[in-house]
Structure formats: C-alpha cells, structure tokens
Amino acid sequence: MLSMRIDATSTSLSWEWADNRWRSGSSWISPYDHPALEIWSVQDSQRVAFQVRERMPGQLPHSPDAPRPVSTRAYSEAVSKAAAWERAHHLIEITPNGISVSTGARCPAPVYLTESGGVLQGHWDVTRLLRAVQHQHLDPVEVARLLARTGHYSTRTAWQGVSLLTERSNVWFHDGELRVRVPEPARHDEPRELSPDARVLDGYERLLDAVLADHHYVPERTAIELSGGMDSSNVAMTLANRHGPILVSGALLQEGAAGEQQKRRRAAMIRYAGLRDTALRAADYLPLDPHYVPRVPLGPHEEIYIAGHSQLLAKWKADGVLWAATGVGGDEMLSLPPEQLPPLVPSDFPRWLTLTTFEALRDQESGIPPAPPISDSTLRALACGAPMYLRAGLWPLYPLADPVMWRFGQWLPFIWRRKKYLARARLKRLGFDAEVTHPPLRENFHDVLHQALVRFGPASIRALLATGSPLIEGKFVDADELAAAALRLEQKQLKPHDGMVMHVLRLHHALI
Image (tube, rainbow, N blue to C red; front, side, top):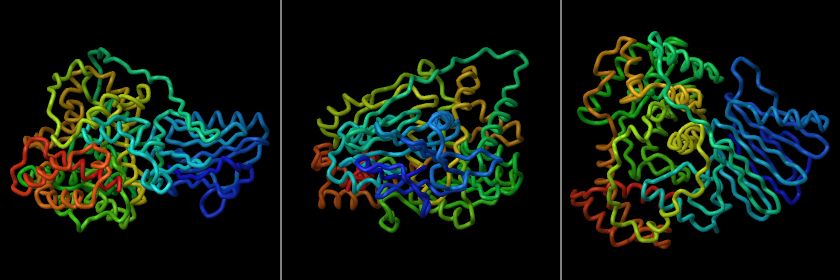
C-alpha cells in the first residue's frame, strides 16, 4: 500500500505533500496511487502520523495534504481511531522516541521493511529493497522453506535484515534497531449445530455480498479471475448478481481434455452472468520461456505462472480495469480441521537439497506470528500475489479471505465444508449442471508445468550452473544433482520431485 524512506537521524515535523508523496528533507512516504485508497495525516507539537488505507464505500476520499496540526489530546484520539481502521491500512508514526509502522488484520498489499545507517526503508515489492540489502546475507531458514516448499506466513524473508510486516503487527525503529511487536493470537471458533430451519446458502450469499459491498470499487472497472474453480465462480456470481452484465472476466486456460472441460464450464458461467471475457492459453506463456523474461525483478515468493497472469492483467488494465476480484482464500475458508483430514504421508525430498538445507529446516517454525484471524496459507497467498497486481496498476479484491468469511466457514458443520459442498451447492441452486458443480476431470496446470520443464528446464539449469548461484555458494543445493536433473529432463525421464526444480530456478533468479 505504500513505500517509504525515513531517515531517523534527521526526523522533522516539517512535512509537505508534493509529487504524490509526503516529503521532509531526504525522507519520504509514497502511498500507492489507486482510487481504492485514501491517505490521512495529522501532527501535534512532537509527533506526526501518516496512514494509507482502503476507502469506505460511498464516501469521498480525504484530499492529499500536509499533516494537519492538532492539539496533543486530539492527536492521540485521532491516531487511536486510525489504528482501529477495519479495512486494510498501514499507519506510520514518528515520535521523539522512534518510528512505528503498524497494520491491521486485512493485508492485501503488505509492506517489507529494512534499515541501514539509521534509515528505515519499506516497500510493497521486496525487490525494490534489493539495492538496500545487496550486502545482506541470505536467511537460511526462509531459503530452506522455499526450496522444500514448506513455507510459512512469517516475518522472515529470503534476506537477513528484511522483514515482512505481518498482520496486526507493529514494528518499532529506534537507534538503528528494528523490533517487532506481535499481536495476541486471534480467536478461532468451533463448528456450530444448525437449527432445523437454517438457511445456510442464503446466509453465505448475503455474507459474501456484504463483504464485497464493504469495499470501494467501480463495477464497470472491475474484473473477476474466473478460472472455473468453485471459489472464483462463487465470487463471480455474487458480483454479477450485484451489478448485472457490466463486468470483465478472464483466466488462463489449461490444455487437453481438462482444458476443454474448463472452456465449457466457463462458457456456461459467462453466459449466465453476461461477462465480457478475456482468456489466454497458459501454454502460450510457459514458465522459463526466454521470450517472457520479466522486465522487472521478481520476488522469491511470486507465482510460477506469472508470465501469463501478468499478460492477462495488462490486457485488463488496457481495457480500463482497475480492480481484480479473485477466489483466493476459498480453499482455506472451507477447509476441514486437522483431525478431519487424512493423515499426512511423509515424502522424500529432491536429492539436490543438501544437509545445510535440512539443518535450516529444523528451525522452520521461527518468525511465525501468533495465530491470525485467517489461515497462514491464505496470508502467504496474499503476500505473494500483491506485487503482481500492484505492478499492473490493479487493486486486488479478496472477499473469501476476509476474516468475516473465515469465521462463517469455521461455524459451519463439517458436512458443509467437506469437498467444498457449500460452494458447489450454491452453484447448483443457481441452475448450473453437474459439469460445472462437480467437474469429472481435475483442472490444474501440471501439463503446462511439465511442458515448461522439458522444453526450457535443461538450458535454465545449465545456465545456472555455468554462471553460479547463491544457492550453490551457500551450499543449499548440490550442483551435481542439479546437473543430473537437467539430464533427466532432457531425456524426458523425470523422477518423482523433479518438478520441484522449478522452485530452485525461481528462487535463483530472485536472488541474483
């Protein structure tokens, strides 16, 4: 939601608004420029506070300006009220005792922070901090998590000295030291017993509608990522019911029989909602394809299929779209508690992971904040996706990741959550046939990933080996085993877990 550079060695209360940012000497705070957001600032005789936040629907945004002078009492009351803002926000406060950066429970675009020489820097895109951290060492725990795909929502990043401001947290910067204050664990609820006349589908539809209504967005400039999955489909139908046939939709299409099924299912929903659709073949934008080398650095957590996804967002933006609604969070909202899930079967790791990586994984729980209001994996997905949307000039909407929807899911008896019964039943009630509600073929990008690995994997691995990699220098990955994987890909004789070489390549390119 913002980027900033604050020199704590020369802080001042003399801030002005100029060139779309607050400025004071060499210090500045730059809000992300989007009509979904508004800014607010205030100061007393010793303190100054800035907030970037999601707007309330139906209200005009605050006019950008220098901090408004108020009394000491009025300042404290105003900052306390700002900290309680229920929508997404970041609040920065500069006082004689240090600098505070805090955020709320909703994190569609989190901020990464680092400090050097008494200067606090932050950005929603961790790659924009790389110049400031070029001499920082890699964080072995986070690197190991990324390589082994055992990620957590955590303050840790791939670089020591760079932290993610996690939900409801506060970072305090004083005398060149960053200290994180984590929140109390969020309360989680148990399933409730339904009354005989409970109208669960009505409740789900009303709640999803209310969550969307709580966001400021312009329907004519809003798109929905309609892959055809249960989650995005339900969000799309709610948006269509709210606004009629004025919305844009889009997706990356899969290959083979599953891709044909996906086309039929999406076509049925597009007809129902009157959507204006943009669809791209995922196979036309394969990961690792040198034709789609990103123009900007990508962070280590960003999605594998970002080339095609970014192209879709660019087409939307050219069509005037400014908001993108997704179904992210739906899996976790309707997930079963651990005791209801099948037991996990231990699996082998790829042979290229080294003893150094396994030793680091012993500490993989470190940096994990207390229990959040929504799931760890949903928060990770939001953090991973935000830079892609913001680079494209779009503000993401995640209605199924809202804590209100999460609590509703926790209240539901297991029967409504198992195999996404709630989401499927809602689509059935809208009149969709069984292929839409219960598709017989699994729709995923495994074939696309296989194509990418076979076509471009060997050359990508050998280029890594030829130029060197921080992952090899840090002894996280074994070079000989990577070379053997390249040969197997070239001969199309893949072993289990060879697909995970994609994560080595993705992380390598993020670190160089």
